[in-house]
Length: 226
Length: 226
DNA sequence: TCCGGCCGTCAAAATGCCGCCAAGAAGCCC
DNA sequence: GGGCTTCTTGGCGGCATTTTGACGGCCGGA
Image 1 (cartoon, rainbow over the protein chains, first blue to last red):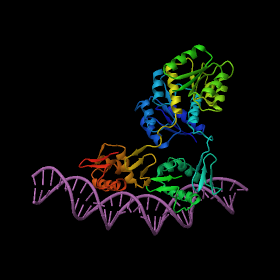
Image 2: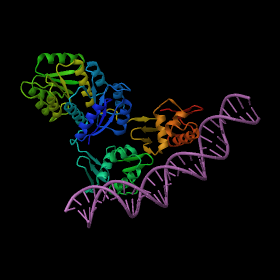
Image 3: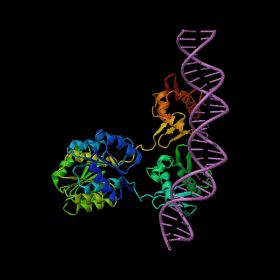
Image 4: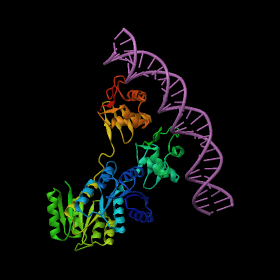
């Protein structure tokens, strides 16, 4: 599911967008000023940001820069200003698109689709296969193979595996795992992680009690080692 | 040098674009109908395509589809039509942006820069590595490597290392270290720092009792020297 | 020379976290 | 409703990490 962050200080615009997006089964977060927008983006990792430039607390361009400091998430700017130099400034600051108000909802949605589409990794072209000594993971086909036989994973197990495998060698914090797999409301239920990591290890590790691929970093998170 | 393919059947528009782009030292090819546009794209592999929708020989959307069949090159559509459904159709066919005529040259150029920029490969996203003579720190992966082997750090050790390493060569005060690692309530517990600096040195310094990278500034704080 | 502050070192005590097990709860498909 | 899988929850032992206290060395000032 695609996650959208809507940033605007006008409640009616936010409401209209939220309704339209949810109707198309997007997952929507919203913020009404720059500071909370940056916080929300960091917490939720949206797939696209719709950003109004006229925010009460800070310049919209500053928000763009704040985001670009650490993420390449597509940013679609909304603005009432038609002036060319404003557009140029926002685009050069790192925005992906610039839509002037009033805007057509159809057009905005199409631009969002375009932005999300091109941000997608080159899917299918190369085999999204990750291999280790004991098993292989095919992200596109959603299959795990061990010793020539496919391993059955439950939805949660798969989701967890996917997040870990997409960050090979990197440490993924417990909070991030919980939020990506169980949703934003979860951040303290580390026992879930214990249970499911144990299951993954039982199904995929050669010696589940001495894992070589799903490493625990005590107090911090977990790491997948190819 | 960035290569641009301009596709339009109106000679004066093509000329204006070519002049402007060449002045900014882009390399420019042009085509005036769909068929030659597809041929030119295949032959020259442009970095961005500026495409007028109203072509004499074929529908502009067909050109988009023809390109998308084999390339993800950014496509910026030009069109005299303001209708929303036209924009939606072009964007959903695979266009990256849609600019209505008459357009401001500044804006178009900014949109081109945006399109080219985001098509660029992810530069430096990973490998945020900091290296010293004896060890390397990978901030993104949360890994420390010494003599080819990964060094295990506890959460507190890592946190402390991170703060120091993010301020290379600079003095970080004891208060600041305590507050960043242990929280805002801590500012006097300098014994914590003594204990943990000793651990870091034991794990990372060649000669822990004569540190070369984690320097104590008596009475002030600590400094990381790369 | 003595004293006090500051740092490094060590080790014991306290705390918190992880792996493991198992049972209850909630869905899902007939 | 029955049987199945999957998800949630809880408790416990073991162990790594953190906290705390004590001791000695170094240095500058009285």
